[in-house]
Image (tube, rainbow, N blue to C red; front, top):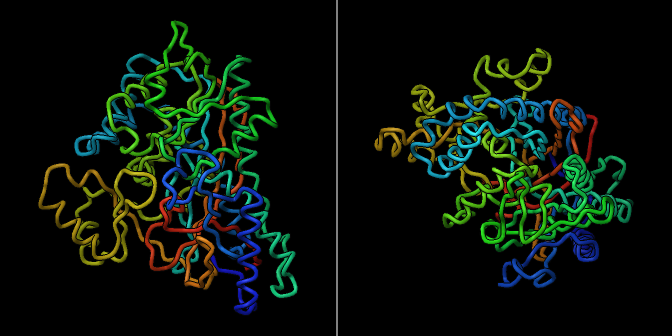
Length: 475
């Protein structure tokens, strides 16, 4: 993956950047400004353009096609794995000994298993993230996200921005806007949520979006609210976990009612990090929702399938065969797996201590800023070995992927600067099933993130990367 820029001079780039930031403000490609303390709680206050790449990044079309083809396969895999409660509990049994957050999630999952709780309507909105490894020239999966996948709203607009800039400055850039693939992730997510609402079949019910008390990425979320209302006539309410605990109840028939409103679909845009559960109230809310008949996106089992440990377990020999029958599809999934190892593997741990730059040490966390790289891998592994016991079980080791770096112009806070960058492609997927009937299983847009080479992490909301789009090439 590499930038498409090259010929525009500094003055032209500056002019393009000003046009881009003005366009962002006019089209809702915005986030809350960290400099304004109210920007995460009061809509319309303290807006700033989202961090963006000025032009799209190149990717050979063959890898784009491969990533798109994988989306429905991963959707189905998540659903199949989620049905095997014993596999989830057993695979995460050591992790729970040293990770309280995972342990609490497993407790809720176990309660649902013991109660034989059935989720007839199952909705997953996923994102599988990839990098193009320069050493093997292969597309390798970074991770599979099953809860609170971000930026379906804003990434759709970045595509429009890049097409607009290419058309406006075509004489300078020698690019073809048709090479930027369409991206309707926000509309597709809204459509999947609406279909789940339809299946629930209670006209007065709402979609409830679970949000953090302070959310500077709220406008990404409001795009889904807009499409649910305008295209599907569905009302969305936004609630924090603590508000659900205070205002929610489950009726005898299983109906979830929050502040007097029946809830058809619970859509999590929070709840993926321990920081979202500062007290028992939040855990009580999570259990309450799980016990209800509302459609959960994701259910507790879908959430657990997205943990790093399960990703590593699925990469083991013969494990995919436990859940899928089609050998050709299994081969396609396995082809994109990077090296993944449990820290029970003493030889791999030894190798990682000797060559820490070839590995990434990953804890059971989502949201960016958690992974360990470089010499810190060596120090962490030595410390964990000294601690002994199950301390190593809180982490997995992953092969470090080395994408090709390229120059790009990045725009953040109104300033444009050129840097050596690498990019990460995320493919969104939607899966909806009611009992045995699969209603949706498809790809639905993409997220491109670009970061400077000196940054190991890749989260946009966490401040490490910028939003980008794709420019497809023949090679």
